Amino acid sequence: MPELPEVEALRDFLDDHLVGRTPARVLPVAVNVLKTYDPPPSALVGHEVTDVRRYGKFLDLVTDGGPHLVTHLARAGWLRWQDKVPDTPPKPGRGPLALRLVLDDGSGFDLTEAGTQKRLAVYVVDDPRTVPGIARLGPDPLAPGFDRAAFAELLRGERRQLKGALRDQSLVAGVGNAYSDEILHAAKLSPFKNAGRLTEEETSRLYEALRTTLDEAVARSRGLAAGRLKAEKKSGLRVHGRTGEPCPVCGDTIREVSFADSSLQYCPTCQTGGKPLADRRLSRLIK
Image (cartoon, rainbow, N blue to C red; front, top):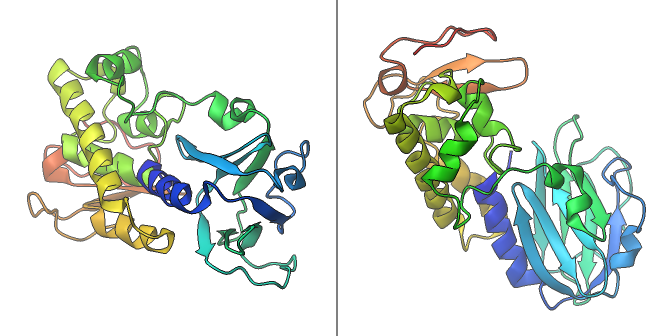
């Protein structure tokens, strides 16, 4: 799933390639990709793109005098840039193509989604704050005003485990499954530790790990072409997706806890006092 660093890199990429250009065609291909109907996608045509913004994991294409095109790539969505879009209109079908946008110079992008669970979402709106997912977003962890005190206040009274809290977009915007694993490993904290019971020192470690992990991931991704971002993300991960490999910090074997539709990875030595977490949905907290 694209998370804050990859979406921020896509924002940079699209800012370079879209701003100053005008959509000539907007072609929804998958019937379920559009989550709004008024204004229609055709309302974007003829309105110059003036800015590209990010809200958590959402991308927002701002047009001059026209609506916003807001996209959430979900778990398996991606944006594929083309310097020259084919002239032949795409045909609806069972393929990965969900939506195509063609600019006035013939370039453009496809929004694609792999797999059978179609969750990629596109909204054409006059105000991005009307998109439900954006309306309930918490603060951006890379925003200048997001300091340790603000983070500590968010955690005050939290009853959830750290893994779940970090992934909650209404608490902190943009962190998903992969980077929550990376942040907790850097902070040397168990994914099942109660978020509201951290010591002052643990809160400071978690805040620093949050900012550093995301800052470094954004720096690695910035300037890359859209097609290279997935590989860059995978290469930069130290524990997520690396079950059975040695921890790059201590050498212990990275372990996994599997759930119905996801999994987490962690290092027992670095994060749980050497104790493996039970690999079941209702694993108890290791303090």
